[in-house]
Structure formats: C-alpha cells, structure tokens
Amino acid sequence: MNGWRILDLVFPYIEKLTPAEQASEDQRLQRDITAIETADWTQSDERALDEAQKVATTEVERVRTAESKATTYLAVLAALVPVIITLQVANWEKKAGPAPDAARLFVLTVATIYVAAAGFHAFKTLQVQGFQRVGEAEIAAAWQTQKPLRKLTRGTLLATRRLRNAVNAKITRIRVTHEHLLRAFGTFVLLLLLDPLFYAMGFRNATQEPPSAKVVVVERPGLSPLMVPPACCHRAPAVRWPEIAPTVGQQPAVAPLGPVPKVGPATAPKPDRLGEAKESAPN
Image 1 (tube, rainbow, N blue to C red):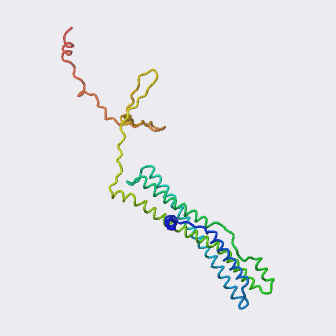
Image 2 (cartoon, helix red, strand yellow; image 1 turned 90 degrees about the horizontal axis):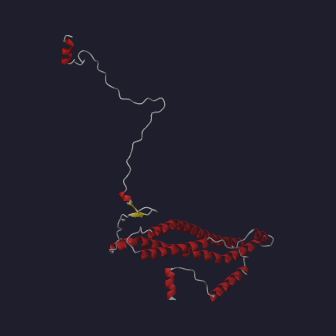
Image 3 (cartoon, rainbow, N blue to C red; image 1 turned 45 degrees about the vertical axis):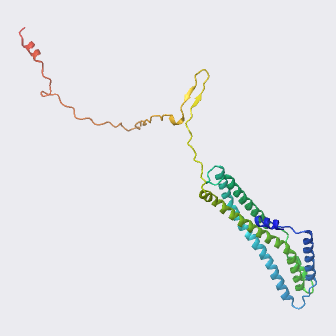
C-alpha cells in the first residue's frame, strides 16, 4: 500500500474501483432511486420541486466548472509545447549550459510526460457523455397526471441522481489534471535550475577549437594533381569602378582649357646669328 501511495505522489492516477466497491456503489444507487420513487411529496409540492431544481442546477454548474477549467488547462498546455520543442532543439544542438546532457534529457522527458498526462485527462474531462435531465416529454407527461408537480419533482431528482457518477468522474479528472500541471511546472523550474547548479559546482563547457585550414587535392585525368589552397588563402579579385556612359542628349563633361597664348614679336623665335651672317655676305 505504501508503494502505491508513493506512486500516486510521483505520478497521480485514477484508481479503478474494485468489484466489491463497484457492487456497493450500484446498491447505493438503487437505494437512492427507490427512496426517491417512494417518497411522499404531499406536504409541499412547490417547495419540493424548487429544491429538486436547485440540486439539478448545482450539478450542472459542477459540470460547467470542470469543463471550463479543462479548457483553460489545455490553453496552458498549448503554450508549453513550443517551450519543450525549443529546449529539446537547444539540447541536441549543444547550445545549452554546463549541465550534463543525460540529466537535462531526463528532466525534460519527465516534464513532457507530465504535460502529456495533463492533456489526456483534460481531453477526457471535455468528452461528451450521456446526461440525464427532465425534457419536454417528461413535462408534458407530468401535466397529464393529477399531480404534475410531484411527478416533476420525482423526475428531476431521479435524473440528478443518475447524473452524479458522470459529474464526479469529470471532477476527478480535472483534479488529476491540476496535479499533473503542478508537477510539470516544478519539473520545468528544475530544468531551468540545472545549468546554474552545475555551473556553481564547477562544471564548464569544453571550448571548441577553431577549424584548421585544409588543403584540397583535385585530381584531373591526364594531369598532375592540382593543389587548391584553402578558402582562407584565396585572394579577393580587384574591384573595378564601373564606367557610366552618358545618356542620350547629354554631352560628356570636359574640363575647360586655359587661354591659348598669341605668337607675336615678343614671343617669336630669334633667328640664328650664323644664318644672318650668311644672308648678308655678298654673292
């Protein structure tokens, strides 16, 4: 018994009824149905019908509360799925902290199991089941009798009593969902504390050495092997400025030239004196 108690603390679950307990529940249901059918409602028909409707309304509110909580829990679980995927990817790509991979994977697996169990019980809470209620046919049949209020009271109480087991099952499942979510939250907190704890204990990540340059040998048929230097040794090609051609109707820009000097007496070249002597000599 202690082992099952520990298992329930670690992983909450719904324990099925034993055959003896199930038989006891069936007998209890039959006793309640018999008591409702044989009850005397002659003292106050209206008061009895009002109390029966209050009991039925209470059961319906319990169902609505359980289903509303299940919907909220499913929204929380949907928000946790991307977190689990991100943590798993970071673990596989070695982008996490100094905590060992085995410890991180174990805690992440436990958190995933809790999230999956909470989602399962939340979906089971929202599962549509057969409900007992007083409908139009029962009301019409009651008004065909001499005492319709008594018949309505009896029908309302019988429907509420037969519905109680389904309502209790929904309440039990939403409680188990809550317990699984609490444990999933605690597991995620532990997962976030792994790296600081191992860092405080002196664990560090191994430094990754930069990749060394490699020489690639390309063999061509009929030629000697060609040594291809690594990518880090390739020279970048020279950058050449593009030449922009003038558009249609646009003249190329030419720098203006200075004024052309005039050739006059002051600037004319002087004749050679030897030439002048030759010209002045008599023929």
